[in-house]
Length: 117
Image (cartoon, rainbow, N blue to C red; front, side, top):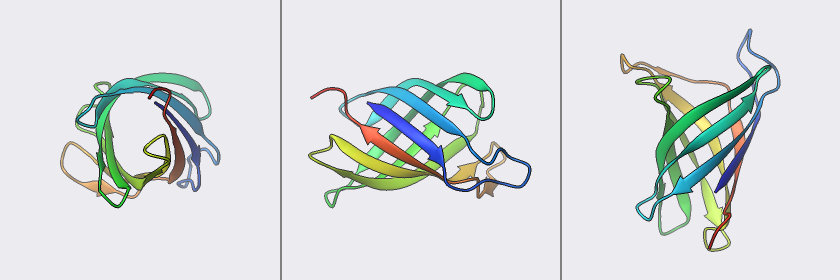
């Protein structure tokens, strides 16, 4: 699965525009792992893992973590359609830090595109 994201809003002092692309391998239980490639404003690669929780009404909740940012979890919501082959997420809606504090980060709109079945 590909997850392509573009910034919708930015934080004070943060780049006004950022983009990322993640290639994810998704298991049958909704868990995934992969690599996120970003430009904001410099190029970076980040191993990621997380899960998608898809409901019968096609809404989806997702969370994303990276071993390079221990304890930081990004949470998002969206919808899938075309039998799960396409969809979108607004991510992160919230970021949880290791001390369990939460922050409202810059929002990004992410398109989901299935590369397989």
